[in-house]
Structures are given as structure tokens and as C-alpha cells.
Image 1 (spheres, rainbow, N blue to C red):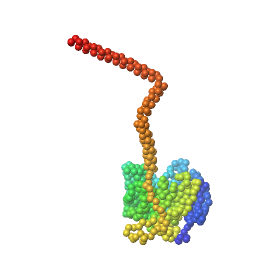
Image 2 (cartoon, rainbow, N blue to C red):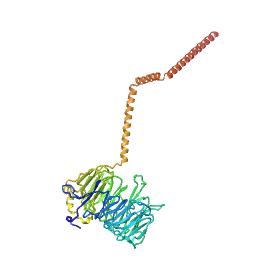
Image 3 (cartoon, rainbow, N blue to C red):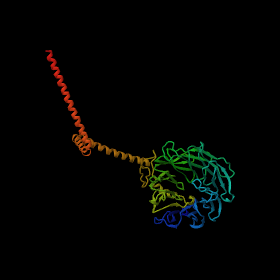
Image 4 (cartoon, rainbow, N blue to C red):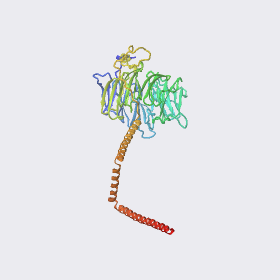
Amino acid sequence: MSDANSSPPLEILVREPGGFAIWNGPPFSNNQPSIKLDKVPCTSAKFSENGSKLMVIKSESSISIYDCRTLKEIRCFESPNILAAALSPCGTYLQTFQKASSPQEKNVTLWKAETGESVYTLSQKNMTKATWPSIRFSSDETVASRMATNELQFFDAGDFSKGIVHKIRIPGIASAELSKKPGSHVAAFVPESKGMPGSVQIYACAPGSQSEPVARRSFFRCSSVQLHWNHGSTGLLVVAQADVDKTNQSYYGETKLYYLTLDGTYDGLVSLRKEGPVHDVQWSYSGKEFAVVYGFMPAMATIFDKKCNPLLELGTGPYNTIRWNPKGRFILVAGYGNLPGDMAFWDYVEKKQLGTTKAEWSVTSEWSPDGRYFLTATTAPRLQVDNGIKIFHYNGKSLFKKKFDKLYQVDWKADSPDKFGDIEELVKSVDSLKVESKPQGQGSKSSQAKPVNPPVQKKPTAYQPPHAKAKAAKEAEVWQTHSSYIIVLKQFLADFFFGYLLGYLTWFLMAIVNIALWRKPFCVSTLSLIQEISKNALKNKKKREKQREKKAAEAGSAANSAD
């Protein structure tokens, strides 16, 4: 373990439309970072996994490699039609993908970063997340492999002139992931096909090993997976994704979390306490624990040990992201993307929450290599407005903010956590900020230590998905419309009952006038018809009167004859 005074300085890469620059990391003098390397024009920049090299893509035909210790350009590669490039974890090799002019052209080239020598070439039709980089390395670059049709190919990472040294045949393989350090095993995913279930299989990478998997897990209704190896290469977490949720509770499908170990001590589903999707998974730096954010909103966050026993509950809230600091002591749970940006900082050793804050519209977020600072950034093209950088202390207190008109990328320079001093000296200040809850039956209130200026805990409101908000707004609009109809109906009834005779007669007279003015032929014919009916009625009346008179006369004459 390095002493804190001899720890390497932190550095931050910031890329804007004019190019990238390197800042000196915190702590800042005068609360402002100093510039270590001024802007260099480029379209993309990426540190190697160990932070020793920096790859800078300047154009479609030019890539430069920088030494991160001196920030000097050590090699420039000139090649036409470069579509993508990647550095190996230790910065030893550069891999480029070019647009092929013919199907037979070898358009993927592996270069030695320092000498510029081409050590291997191959042909690849297209580039996807599962197939790029074409040649993948373990974190220590002891193993190199390539996924081909129905097989995994392995190379001698120190001498690519030997070509493919051995193969593992895996029919139907769709993706693969090498273990980290050491690179002793590889996990392969085979999707379901023709009624056969999908599976994740783990194989040993050594040339003399058997071709049978050392661990295997099968599952139905799985279209894709995310594979997460722990540090030490002893366990694998598998997030299995199905396109359709059979319970119809999620539009985005269904996810399950599985855990496989090389020694066979565990092989199955991780038991989660809440139904819903698995939002994020991350191993601790020690490789002995892993943290999961899962469930329908408000989501839960839980830390498990290597036997999938829960160790610590980090509460519930609008969370979909978890970040474990490289030292393994501090943990952040947050909700980014379409969530409001709530962040909660925890001390895993003391099992206490240190503080809460917000970082709205964050696109990227990561702990510093020394584990003392947390950085969030709002970048384009994901968001075209409110671009900027925010840096927080390990307990959530704001350290630095800066806004940009346009910001494309922000990254810490990677480095091994072992190079930095321990953070035990921070525990004293951490203790004064803990949010404690009194255990039952452990003394009176006066005997319990009270935190100094504890962060105000706001009760989180229940998460409401966008479709529910739209439904509520629509219901409110419908209710408002119905209310308007009720008011109109009440007014009509009042007018009807209180002014019935006058209103009805006025309406009837106006109707007659309108008919008379605008429908005169109809009105004349109607009046003629009425007059005709009146004449007939008068004739009938006269006939009835004559008949009555005739009957009365006949009755009188009959009476006289009887006398």
C-alpha cells in the first residue's frame, strides 16, 4: 500500500468541440483546476485500462498514442477509412477497424503501440457491441481471444506471429467475456434456438484444458445477457434479459440475475426481495461482495456476499445506478437518465449513510481512482443543453461545478487503487456526518452520540412513471370538461323551470317567424292545407247537425202516431 503523500496525482480528460484537454484533479488550488495539457484537436480520446497510454483519434486516417506520464505523443498511425479503434488494457496494442473495399480484404489490424508494427490482421464484415474489439485481452494481457462463428479462438498474447494457438468449439455462440485478472477463464453465451434453452458456459482458457465447460447455466426466454466477472476470476454474475415480460408489468421486458462460481458452490438465481427489473450490478474491488439495484420504482439496493447472502440494505428510492469506489469503502446509489438524479452516499465499513444530494441530467458518473471524489457530467449528444461537470466529496458535499456550451466527454485517468494511500484518515470526518438510527434496547437517547449537522433527509415521493402522469393529466382534463357540462346543464334547467312559458313561447314565435321569412312556399302550402282541413271540418259538422235534427224529427212523428 502506497503512502498518501506518494500517491500519484489525479487527472481528468475533458473533451469539447475544439478538442481535448487534461486537467489536474482535486484537490484544487483556489477551487479551480489547472490545465496540464491544453486543447488538442481530435474526434475521440480514450485512456487504456491501466492509465498508461492515451489513444487520440484525430481524423478518419490519423490516430496518435500518448504516454500518460509525460503527455507526449509517442506514435502516430496513418491509415485510411478508420471506423473504430481500441487500446489493449495495458496499452501494448492498438486495434483498428477499417471500411473494407472487398469481402476478402483484411480490414482489422493489430498494431504494436510503441513501435507501430502490424502484428496481426483479419477480416471482419461488420462491427457490433458483441464483436468489437475483435481481439479481446484479459486485464493483465496474458490471454487474447477472438469470437468466430461457432468457436472461440485463442492467441499467444506475447507473440501473435504464432497465429491461433487453440480453439474451443461452441455452436451458436453469440457473445463472450474474458475474466479479468487473472484471465484464466472465459464465459460464452448461446441464445435459445429451435426450442433449446439459452445458456451461459464457462471454459478454462489454458491450451491443455478440456473442451467441456467447468460451469453452465441454462434458461428459457432469454434474448441477451450481460456478463460481469469479479476481481480474482472466481465468480460470474449474469443479467439475463428477455424481450417480453410474461407478467405484463414492464414494457421493457424481464430481467433475472444469476450467479455462477468456478468451484460449483453456487449456480442459480440470486434471490431478490422485490419484483421488477435488475437496473445495475457491480462487484467490489476485492471481488468478495457485489451490489445490485433492482425492482420496480422505488427500486431497492442490496449488497450480497459471494454466497448470495444479503449483507446490507441501502434503502429504496428512485435509483437505477450503483457505483462502488475503488477502495471498497464508499458506495453511491443514484437515479440517472429519466430519473431526477438523486444520489445517496454510504460508508460500507460502518454501514451508515453519509449524505444525499442531486445531480440532474447526468450522463456519465464515476469515482476517482483514489476513491475520495465522485464525478458526474452532462454531455452531448445525449443532452444538448445544460452541459457541465460536477465533482463531489465522498460524503456528497459539492466540491466543484463548471458549465459548458458543449461538452462531449469527461473521464478520470485510470490508475490502480493500490497506488494510492489508504483513506482511514477520512473516517474521523465521516463519523461526524453519519446518519444513525438507534438500535432497539441499546441505552437512552441521552447516551447516544448525535451527528453534527446531519444532512436533511427528505422523504422520497412515490415514483410515478410517465404513462401514469399522462393518464392523470388526461383524467383531470376529462373531469374539467365534465364539470363544464354539469354547469351548463344546471343553467339550462334553471332557465327551463323559471322561465318556461316565456322562453318556450318566445322560441315558438321566433320559429314561426323564421319559417315565414325563409320558407314562404312551405308556409303558404301549410296554411292552404290548414284552410282546406277547416272547410272539411265545417261541412262534417253541418252534416252531423242535420242528422241529429232528422233523428229528432223522426222520433217526434213516431210519438204523435202512437197517441
